[in-house]
Structures are given as C-alpha cells and as structure tokens.
Image 1 (cartoon, helix red, strand yellow):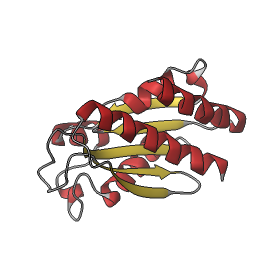
Image 2 (cartoon, one colour):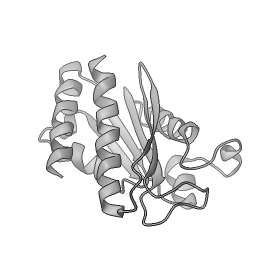
Image 3 (cartoon, helix red, strand yellow):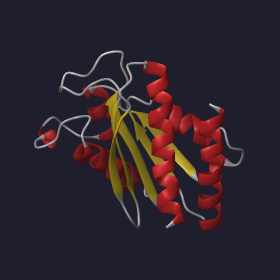
Image 4 (tube, one colour):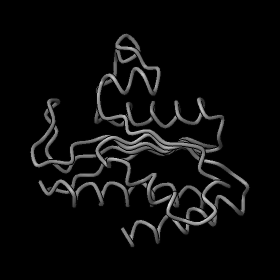
Length: 160
C-alpha cells in the first residue's frame, strides 16, 4: 500500500495545484485506487467519489449502464474501461475520470481473459486507455499492480 500511496501523493499534488477533481470506477482493483487517493491528507480537495463496479448489478445501479447500454461492449475491455471513466467524469462533473476493469485471479474471467488482465482508462481534457497483462494468478498482487498502473496512467496525463 505504501507504493500506491506514494503514487497517489504525486497525483494529489498535481490535482491540488491545478484545482482539479477526480472520480474513480474500479473493478478488480477492489477499491485500492480510491483507498490510495483517500489516504493522502487533503483528499477532499480533489476526490469526489469512487465505486467498485464489480458486478452487472453494480454496473446498472452505480453507473446507470443498462444491459442495452452494454451492447457493443464487454467487461474487461478497453472500450468498457473508457466508458466507465467517461461516465464517472460526467456523473460527478469532475475534471478527470479514472477506471479499471479486469481479472485479478486466481483464474481468468468468463470473457476468456487470463488472470492478471486489466484495462484502465483516464478521461479528462486528454484521454488514454491501456491494457495490462501481469501473467500472474496472484489475486492480491494483481490488485496492487492494477491500482498502481491506473494511478501511474493518471499521473502521466497530469504531467503532460
């Protein structure tokens, strides 16, 4: 967690300096992204909210994305990660939306992705999407790697 908080401190400094805000939707990171951002003192200046969108029901209730709204999308994909990030940004009216979706392990998901597969996206004044494959089936290790990668992706956009 210390590594995650270290990255989150850098993100927080950038967001505070810019007077910008963020909201997070995460799945297989299980809340570690939000927890890292909230572990930084002064988080209320930039963190507007987060959701662990782990199930279909969570997607419908928390993100207001119906089954029909998922036509052309599948979970654990770059287009879905982008949709989540954009949805968080819009719903919270914030500067940045950050999302993560994947398969932490120890097995893959029902879509055929192996354990250690994650897609993440940043939506803001500039956007970026990426896929990460750890090649590991260590659930907690993958959760930490996914959270760190998502925070680094955000930091990269904030430094651009």
